[in-house]
Image (cartoon, rainbow, N blue to C red; front, side, top):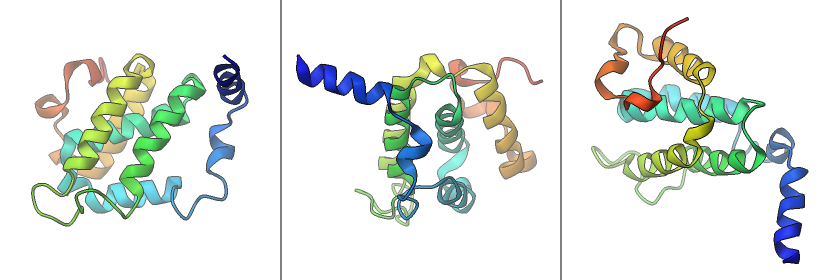
Length: 148
């Protein structure tokens, strides 16, 4: 029982911004954005959008700290240069990243609100331009209800 209490106390005191300080070599907002811009077209609309949902969910003050740990792990895996399946392999290079993104997204689904979807939607329009068609690939529960 004391391990659970210790864990709960750590979660209460968890500061996501503070947690990644000093670890910029492995994970930073800039590295995430750079990787997304570099590989977005290879990853495709769906996984790019889902990673943005996680990213903006991580930044949201409404997302619980315990949920941010899950998001940080998923985005960290996306950013890290070492993968189970290397990203440069055609067709399957992002398979492991995709699985991690989708797993994390379903774990935190309850915290993805319309403002997070809006931010992800706007960023996708900047990345993909006229080639962005969220109607074809995004699961309904993750789509933006109405554009603001």
